[in-house]
Amino acid sequence: MNSLVKSDAQAERLPKESALSAIEESGQYLTFLQRGEMFAIGILGIKEIIEYAKLTTVPLMPEFISGVINIRGAVVPVIDLSARFGREVAVTTRKSCIVIIETVNDNEKIDIGIIVDSVSEVLEILPADIEPSPRFGTNIRAEFISGMGKVNDNFVIILDISRVLSVNEMSSLACVSGESMPEVSL
Image 1 (tube, one colour):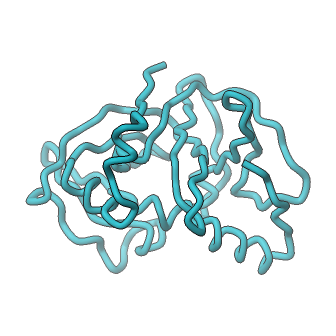
Image 2: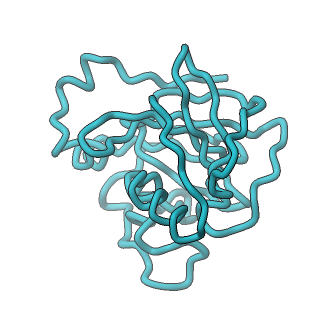
């Protein structure tokens, strides 16, 4: 499986405040399929892509948290992106992958995996080819979408991954539904 790795030198050069603008400036996006729709996320936060493997389930986790995996000795929670979008739990196939993304929560870097149906390719989408996110008509929450990229006369949904993987929001959703989100030391 292909792996995208951001070097520590690259991470050190980017101040935390400019991380989002750097993603937008780079124009490089990983595209993937989820339930027949094409999505994209900026490549700067992606640490690696791994084949889907058996996850260790953790009792009392919300439905959108499929379990955890061990990545080089670290416990990494894995989110079912389909369930996170309020859809049915994803059915994994031999093309399913886990994309490991580094995100920031309370000024602490954490790794979170997302299950996708299949990874497509890395594309360059210029800012001029990105339209604002729609206010209605999509199957996912509008705040999860940072824009709609035009690629070969089709639209690609560009996700705001910091909102999709907001640990604080996922924790509050778990509390509202009556489930608890145990602390996972990362």
